[in-house]
Image 1 (cartoon, rainbow, N blue to C red):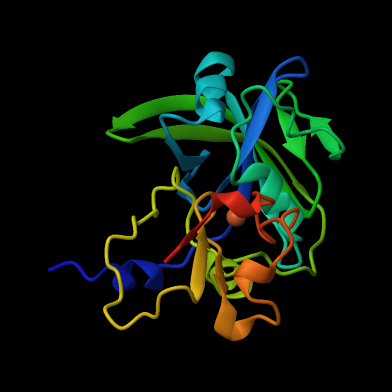
Image 2 (image 1 turned 135 degrees about the vertical axis):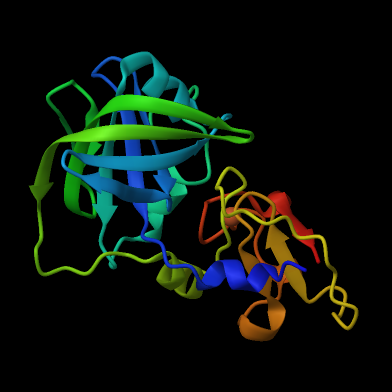
Length: 223
Ligand code: FE
């Protein structure tokens, strides 16, 4: 048997992975960035095939990684984690610099940044593994702690977004759950639990939005 809770015992960081150049670029939140060799330093990332940034990596042969600090505000996740970059500019209002290859690098909330040239791609069903060689890295804040996936789950009440390799679809309905008490955001899986909130969901104003991803109230479903 596979107990899905065991999967959350594996530690991850959280990163913004970007690709492209000054005229077309995009980025997304990733928890799967890991070093696979030291000489030369090569890293792997996992990217959903539906992810626009993945298309850009294949086109521009580059990607950057911004290591997020533990104090990263939820607005960063709202921007980079739960919406596609197709048709919107995720970089608007953000502090961006461009690397040696022209790849955009997000500086907001970053404690370190790394730039890679694409070496290999591996098709793994729903996801593509991109292998990159490190060409440049910059330390921004040596004292700040990096954000961990565990911290994010605990403090933001969120689960993995649907494109994440660690996403697990909710298929089990708790038999003893009480109808009408909990509402889940269908975009980010944030849960408004009436038992823990000062305002019951039905009494929230119609212009209320998801505190995590900014989705409208209508995007919530009763669970
Ligand atoms: Fe949400």
